[in-house]
Length: 195
Image (cartoon, rainbow, N blue to C red):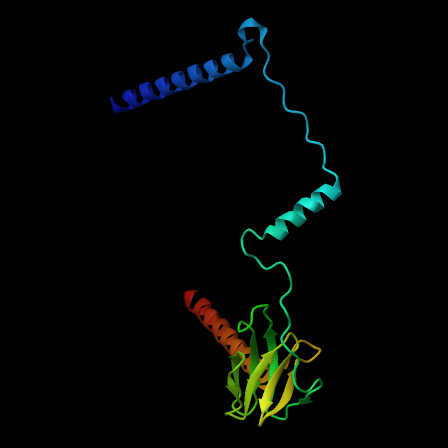
C-alpha cells in the first residue's frame, strides 16, 4: 500500500512540474498583447579616453577615502656608518621580512654557538647580550655591538645554511631507510606465515 501512495505522489509531482514548465515556456514564447516588443538592450558603453580615466583615478587617489597610504613610506635615516663592518659574532642570517611599517620587520638568525634558530625584531638582544638588533632590511640586519654598528648580510645563495641541517637530514634519511627495511621484513614474515 505504501508503494502505491509513493507512486501516486511521484506521478502528481511530475504532473505539477510539467504544468509549471509549460506555463513558463508559454509566457516566454507567447507574443505580447498589442505587439509590444521587449525593450532593447542598452547600447554598449563606449570606451572612455585614457586621459579622462587617468584623471578620474588621480582624483580618487587624492581624496584618499579610506585613509590609505598610496606613497612609499619614508625610509629610516641611514646608519651612522654608511658601510658598516661585518659582525664577528657566531651568527648567520637565514632570512628577513622587510615591512613598510616600522616595527613589523623580522629576521631569522642562526646562532652557531647555541645551535638554535631565533626570529628577532628591532630592539631584540642577540648573541647572549653581545649585540642589539638596530634595523632589519631586505638583505641585511644591522646590529649594535658595543656602540659600533655592524652588519649581518644574507648570502647570495638565499641565506645562511646551518651546518646542523645537513647532519639532521642525513640522520632522518637513515632513520627512514631503517623504518622501510623493517617494514619490508615484517611484510615478508607475514607472507611466509600466511601460506
